[in-house]
Amino acid sequence: MRLLVTGAAGFIGTNFVRQALEAGGTAASRVERLVAVDLLTYAGNFANLADLSADTHFRFERLDIAQRDAMEGLLREERLDTIVNFAAESHVDRSIADQAPFLHTNLHGTLALLDAARTVGGVRRFLQVSTDEVYGSIAEGRATEEWAARPSSPYAASKTAADAFVLAYATTFDVPAVITRCSNNYGPYQFPEKLIPLFVTNALDGHPLPLYGDGQNVRDWIHVSDHCAALWHVLELPGAEGGIFNVSAEDERPNRAVTDLILRLTGRPPDLVRYVTDRPGHDRRYALDAGRLRATGWRPRHGFEDGLAATVEWYRAHRPWWEGVKSGAYREYYRETYGARLRDASGAPPGTAPRS
Image (cartoon, rainbow, N blue to C red; front, side, top):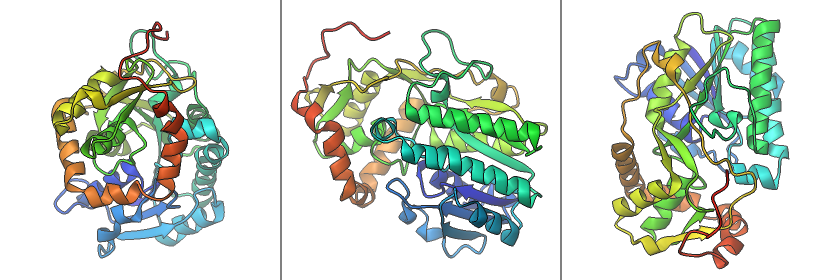
């Protein structure tokens, strides 16, 4: 396998690349060459991959995936036969503030990759890493791959549009593409704008935990290593072209319950929690049915409590990593997102009825 991995210095991309090149790992035995691409914007951190530079199987390029000519050049030069597209702007709050980067990377970047793969040829699998957010809020049951997309945020809309083009290119141009839609990930190297790394690092520093709304929004959680294992599984799954696979441990929990577990694992008091004004269009519940993927033999290996405990310990042991990430521009983002909300925050949930 000769891999192009985009968004390689982000959270899930980093874990996938490290799993691919891990000495003695099952993935490493299948990888002849891995070319990692990342533009290294705010969420991409080359420090995540710097220690891999000596690996002769590995090459890193700082590039924008929307540069079609550059992507074509890499595919030709390295004779790459597999593309895994993690590259994406992924934070809902940022998409509400400014939609342009989400259109550029999530949609136009995906199109550039699809065109490069079609033009160069020789690609045996194009894996588009998508999200459960394309289905929107799930009031009851679990979303299957046949559910209609109902994105609630600009981020989810950009991923929905990209997915549609992936399926269209598979049908019209025979690009051997497949889509995975995963539930919320957690684990090492996650940028601290998402709930778990934000709350873990804030708790370790004794800072407030800004919990949106009444704290009862429900998310489906999966450890990032289980997600990566699912991706390897799909990459080698016969006859998957043109298909969609949900990836989920089917372990859903309210955000307040996750927050309480983080407080217990970090030894911090409940009065750190601050209920803040909810964000616009905040989906109440995500829940995926991963039966299609499970039927092919994949299973998650991490329980949430054990996985979260290990994640907390990783952040505790890697303080220089996240302190560096939470400096500079991140502080301005945090002030803009939570500053006014925290000034008006309460230590108790709001008295209004939960959103439906």
